[in-house]
Length: 240
Image 1 (cartoon, rainbow, N blue to C red):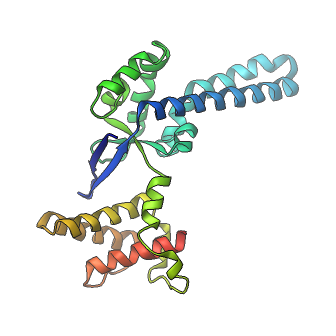
Image 2: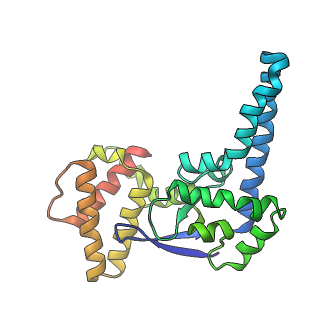
Image 3: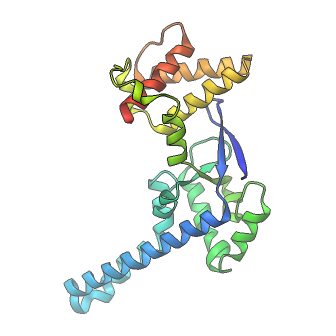
């Protein structure tokens, strides 16, 4: 099981499990099936509605869907196509920055060589040979495909004994607007501060608290560690 540590722009290091080749193949095949079924249904609808003009309509609808499917989904769905989302995979940057459209576009352009032009051989060999499980498009875009979602959600919820908090009243209900990834950063930061109580991790705590104050429009108490723990508890309770 290959793993990678990503340092975010908040100087917090998060460990991810890299997606194996078999998961990426499964996600690709699932996307392929969805495209075939979806486009087949759409073509039948178009033929029934437009009759003789169906070929022209399909040229401007179905072909762009097939052509831009992976690029559009990864860009607008935070690095996840339907297949990747079903298998809890996501495309992220190796430098911790937010993945931009040009990053997804680079991966998409090189799908021709990595997947279609070589029947997946170039991409598969690249993933197997790379220490970060990267195909050529990933390497050039400085991205990796990692496993997220359900595994991380369970880790987050398992931090607390939910059955003992039925009467718990959240202190900061506005934390509900935070994304799960942000709260996972809180979790990772607290864990690392607990294991290694040094200056770097103390600074990470301070930066994270400042970020939370801005995002939630609140003022944190003097006990920054307890503040983050309370935010984490509130989030888990409100989203369980």
